[in-house]
Structures are given as structure tokens and as C-alpha cells.
Length: 110
Image (cartoon, rainbow, N blue to C red; front, side, top):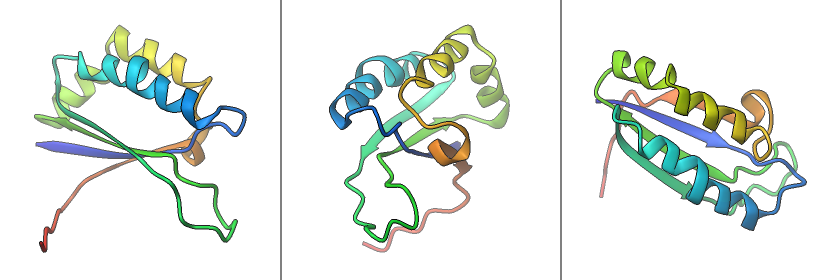
């Protein structure tokens, strides 16, 4: 399984409540409904980094696909493109606001 971990920062003018509502009721369900998606989990954070070196992280999303091919297929759908447009009102632009990485290894110690 291919797993993407995506760090998300909301736009400063968007309230936490509005951001989470959007994620839970509009954005997330769009992804979860894609037949290529095997797992979709949202984690909401209260960022404890208070040094102002970076903007707070508001959410992390874990998305699972069977393979890179099914991920590419999902990212080519009309539904994905519609969700991508919707997120512009809630998430910061570029990798500052949304940054995805492939999970290469998971080590569970407890």
C-alpha cells in the first residue's frame, strides 16, 4: 500500500472551526468517496511550537492507495480537481499550506 502523509496549514483568516468543518464535511468526504482511496484519516492538531519560526500545523491527513498507479488515477479525477479548487479558500498556497510526502517506513514501538 502507498501511504501519503499531508501536512496542512489553514489560511490565517479562516477560523479553526470553519477549517475543520470544511475538512470533515466537504474536503475529506470527496477523497473518501474516490474508489481508489483505501484509507483516509484526518488528524487535527494544536501546534505546540510557539517560537514563531514556522506557522502552526493545523492538520495532518493520511491517505492510502493500493499503488502509485491508483494514486495517479485518483488525482486525475474530476472529483479530485474539484476538491483541489475548493481547498484554495481554506488552505495556504504552495508547500507552506499543504505538503505531501510518501510514508516510507513506520516503526511502532508501543
